Length: 345
Image 1 (cartoon, helix red, strand yellow):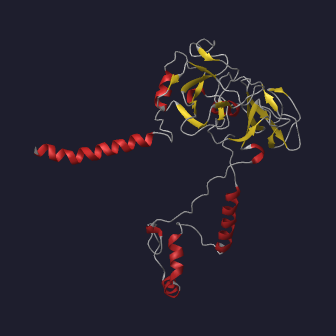
Image 2 (tube, one colour; image 1 turned 30 degrees about the vertical axis):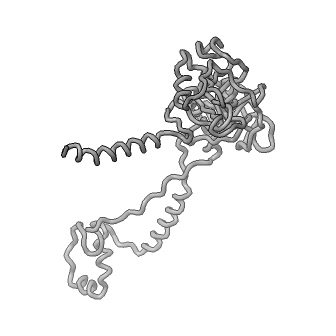
Image 3 (tube, rainbow, N blue to C red; image 1 turned 180 degrees about the vertical axis):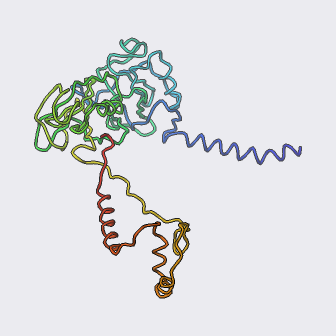
């Protein structure tokens, strides 16, 4: 009896903490897994519809009827023998549907065997149509990767929007390389591919196409090999200057290169040097020569002069230009704030 009484107060907080931890692991809809990410309310739609209808729903495998939880829906979709072509799942009032890109299915990544509903929708999920809260949910399968607006997670590129990148006042696409990165790829892999060439000085953007190409875009006169020639360029155009926007084409998405044309991150400012306590004022670890009688009289009349003297290194001569030196140093510090460094050069 005494043992049971003592253990109960310990057991109750432990169970309470466990329930809090479990609740915090769930997303806003109650899904607790890590294989899928919530996209929005409604049925899943293609990120790059290309020539297909932008409202076209994906193919799906055999459905799971209600009642089910989102965790159970996810487990159902994970149970199929082939997940390579699975882009995610969505739900409606009656079923859980595991969605597949065109040309693939739950039996094989290269055939549509096992599909109970077949359409031409393909590629990564980019958004949703309208739906009813607590009924229609769309989840993207994380392992599928692919191209969509939020696909890039790094800091070297910034999303410009759907379409091909264009300079100000031009409808011409930039030159691009041979696009040898094999599909499927993630946008982080596409970025690493573009940054992996010997030259990034002329790089202006990266693009991903519905056709499965990662394109590294270059300013006119430059290329992936050198900043001074167009070696390595496959499709050569005269487009030049910073990316101003996109043409809105539904077959591609554009990300601009953040460090193009001198747009570079600031170098962290140097911190001011602080003297150790033993070097401040009259206290110093440096050996000092004994004062002459004349210096002793001068010290009595001008005590601060000895403080400055104690901070100088042995053999260092006093300068009458200290104010000027300080002024130059301040200018140098101000200049350092404007100095920039490209992390890829």
